Length: 302
Image (tube, rainbow, N blue to C red; front, side, top):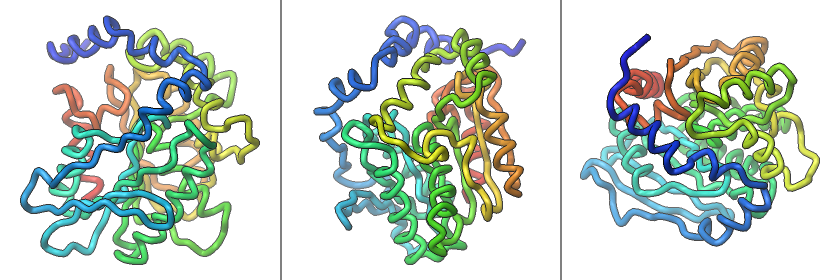
């Protein structure tokens, strides 16, 4: 059994002490009521931390997104879709990560502030991601654009590929795809039973949240399966994807079905599983044990 760092144990202890899982044991209506007013506040940095980068906030087509660009013009870009449970937007820590992503990969980074599901269903969020992807590839060229996402952002990154296929409007696929702990709804009884077992080891997300999440992103609306269940997505035409889960998180219960779905569509999948780690660990990179996953993510997105 591996020895874990003091910080690793401290984070697990703090999650239990402050009731991280308990905060998600709430109905979708409760989430909307609790976070509805908070979601209207968007953190916008005054400037970049690094002198090598510039920051710009844009509002186009009624959609808000930010751009972190290199002062020396670059040909490549990443659309990084952040998480937040569909009820919150990025904060200051996230922007430090976005800048690191730009500096370490050499790419410009575009961050969408997609419509949250506090007021509507996930199809509205996907419409924004679909629109922004087309805008980015028009500027950079599709062969130079990677798409990445963590948690709910991972769900939307996978959803983008399915959305492109479902719409069939001739929009090309991303050059590469990276997802860490993509949020998914439980589809099969086997997934549910596995999620209930993992509920004992996940310090942050309770298994019941996966059902609440379904209520949150649908608002009672009938939606295509791929919007709820990435493990049923339409991935034809995507060349390669890097998929990452932690083996202690409840979402790992759907890892096998997601990877099988991708591979059955001809996608070359690199699967990374963090032993004993947390939800979204390569992006958070807040313990020593997450470092390898963080480096693997950066290398893949170069």
